[in-house]
Image (cartoon, rainbow, N blue to C red; front, side):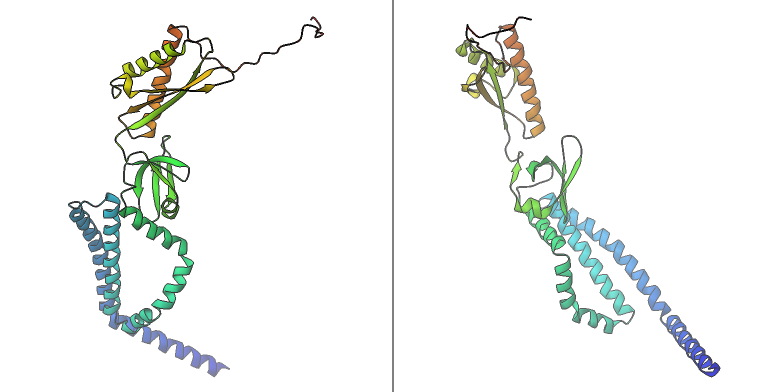
Length: 291
């Protein structure tokens, strides 16, 4: 029993000595590999910045430029990894890695199907012109300004300054409403006046108010005024006009200013904006108790 333990101990000592000898022999290569890998990391960052500078001269979107620069950086790092394996004389391990790349790629592809889908969608979104940095968009029930677009998600800053990260796949597969594709936005304001109002006078007054308060509206012909129906308590109308903005927030601000101006002129001219009321008619012989 003691002999077996002694033999095992001696065998372990020989193995450790062999590993130490190999480490000492390969120590220069290990140090060189570490230095090369650090240089490759720094070089990838420099090449990424250089690629961005070169791409700035092109007409590609900013998001597409960022994606290309990141891909270039990844390729440089992959090349550095192969170089490090060569320095460490791990060519056999490299061949084994390449031989198993097909099977590993299939397994990784199945496991990371969602992530790869977002990556592909991010590349597509970076290339198309429907979504750009600074655009005000609405997608997947979220609305805001596009502040970032990477290989994982589209980042939207909402009017309340919160950030929403929408996966690229959802943005690509669902409808996108882009408020920034045109130079102007239309403001649509709905309101109602009492049944006793002079409808022609109301129309004239609203058109005049919009022209006086909004510079893009040069004449009454630029304002669309439509009566939309007889409501329960009011005659409803809708007024439409354009403003020089593509931001949904600016549209809401213009709508607010229009509401204030219209309410003010209505008050000055004794035009009533009724609220819902209910009138009860009782027959003459209806018994009622007096309180």
